Amino acid sequence: MSVRLKLTLSYAGIVVLAGALMLAAVWVFLLRGVPGVRFDNLHNVLTNVFLLQGRGPLVFAQAAVLGMLFLLVFGLVAGWVLAGRMLAPLSRITEATREAAHGSLSHRIRLPGRRDELRELADAFDTMLARLESHVAEQRRFAANASHELRTPLAITQSLLDVARNDPSRDPGELVHRLHAVNARAIDLTEALLLLSRADQRSFTPEPVDLSLLAEEATETLLPLAEKAGVAVETSGVTTPTTGSPALLLQLTTNLVHNAIVHNLPDGGTVLVDTGVRDATAVLTVENTGEPLTQELVATLTEPFRRGTDRVRTDRAGTDHPGVGLGLAIVASITRAHGGTLTLTPRPGGGLRAAVRLPAELRRGGGRRV
Image 1: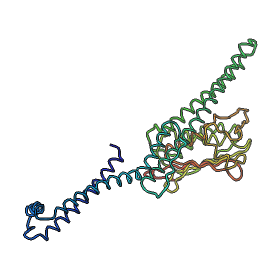
Image 2 (image 1 turned 180 degrees about the horizontal axis):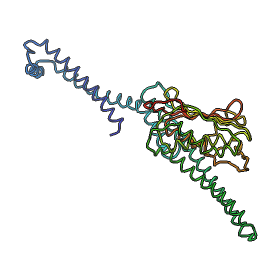
Image 3 (image 1 turned 180 degrees about the vertical axis):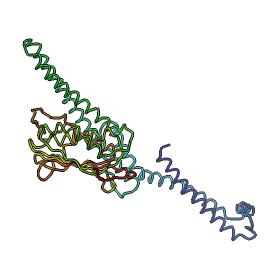
Image 4 (image 1 turned 120 degrees about the horizontal axis):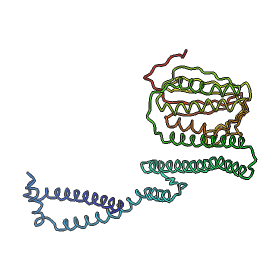
């Protein structure tokens, strides 16, 4: 049986039962007025009920039967109508579910009326559809961008090989050097994609981590790059305990510092790295000087393969550092995987301020680093 039919029978059954109890009460009340009828116990009551057939009016019994039939019909009709009205929102939700199953995620229920359990269910379903639609669209853009980015080094490699095949007299050393650079970029892109996928899947076991130590390790690793670019890196802060994947959080810190060094002033730039615990939150802040940025541009920097205004800089050694366009996207993904938030804001004098906030590990104390 359908849910509507079950509700209809339930409503009708309740109405008939209530009517039967009411008629039984009236019947017993009438028996009290019959001479010689006693109500000392249940046996006497039942006996007197049967005696009423011969001593009481038969019209009452007939009226009772007709009344029960009327209540049954009324209960069935009213129950069917009420059940239909109550289940109408579920029909709209079912229709939206079928639309989503066929790939149409733009459909919304938008259930009108007062906020009750069904309205909350419909609103929650609409929210879920909106998130799914946004996620699918983001995945499609990511797949298209990743395919384009991976195709570029392969096309360049193919072109270089064609040139070498058609021009045997060409210097092989130059060809090998360019092929090596293109291959290195393809490897970096592939590793970045794998890291991004790993962060999204949250496939790691949380461990105690000190963000201040990760900040020191990242700055020491990238110090040669900073020196070549003429960028001064300054670190400060206190012990900042949190929990998560040490490898992923180190990658997060390294990406932020690397991004701050590469996208800086051509000469005399500065990078400020700070860690601390504020309001039970572990905070890692990386600021850098650079060109003025708008809030609209900054809001798009965490999108995969987004490099802003050709965010490519050349250091003093003449080496380009365009990146693969996944640095801040990886930072955002790792932050989400650790239950934190990433905030990017343009600095008034130019450059970017990136703040990562993660749940602090309060069981561990903190003190000023020496």
